[in-house]
Image (cartoon, rainbow, N blue to C red):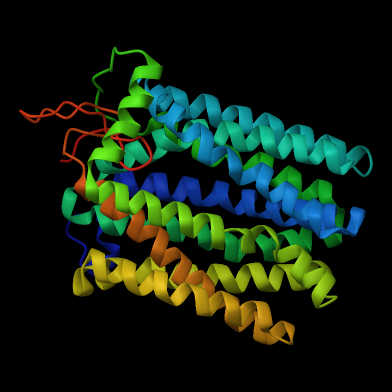
Length: 370
C-alpha cells in the first residue's frame, strides 16, 4: 500500500498489482525450480554423464537467445495478458506430461530433454510480455527495484524449490516434484486473469520488419549496443554453471540430490540478497558502476567455485557467484529499460525527429509508466 514505509529497494511492493504478480510468479517459480532440480538429478543419475546434464540445461535456456525477439513482436500484436495465459497454460500441460511419464516409470533422457526444450521455447515466447507488464505496475522511480525484485523472486524460488524437491523426491519420487510444478502454475495464471492492465497500442508492421528494426536499433544506439554485447558475453561464459550444478554435486562431490539442493540453494540465497539490496546499491553507486563491479567480480567468484575442494566451500563460493551474477543481470536489464523511451516497450517505435527505430524486445518492455 502507498502509505506503508518501505526501504527504497522494496518500494515496488507498495503497488498492489506488482505485489500480486510477484506473489503469483513466486509460487510458480518454486514449482519450476523443483522441476529443474529433479530433472537435473534424474538425468545425471540415469545417464551418469555430465554431458546429458548440460544438454538438458541448454534445452531449457537456449530458446531465450533465439525466440525472445519473436516473443517481443508477439507481445506488441496480441494482448499481453492473453499471450501470457496461453504460454503459461502450455507450460502447465508440458509439466503434466512430464509428471505422467515419471509416474509411469523412468522417462528416457531424450524424452525429458524434448519436453524441457518445448517448455523453454514457450517460456521464451511469453517472457517479453511478462517483462512488458512490469513498467505498467510501478512508476519509473521504482522500476529498478521492481526489476531486481522480480529477479530476486526467481532466485528465492531457487532457495525454496530445491529443498522441497529433495523432500518430494524422497517421499514420492520424481513424479511428485514434477506434479507440484504443474499445480503451481495455477497461482500465476489466476493472478494474470485478474490483474488490471492498461490497453495497449498494437504495432501493425509485420513481425519480420519489427525484429529487424529491433536489431537495427541495437546497432545504432551505443548504450544499448554495449549492454547487449556484455550481456551476451556474460551469459555465454558464465551461465553454464547453473545447468552443471547437478553434475558438480553428484560427480565431483558424490553428494547426490542433497548436494545438488545445497548448491542450488546457496546460489539462490546469494541472488536473493542482491535482489533485495539492488535498488539501494544502484541508487548509491549508479547503474554503470554497479554493472562494472558485478562483471569484474563474477570471474574470480566462478574460479573459486570451480576450484573448491569440498561441498561446503563450493556452497560458499556459489553463494558469492549467485549474488554477483544476479547483480550483473539486473544491471543489464535496468540500464536497457531506463534508456528506452517511456512509450517504447516490447518492440515499439521511437518518435525522434531524426529516427524511427524499434526498441529491442529484450530490453524495452511495453506498457506505460504511471
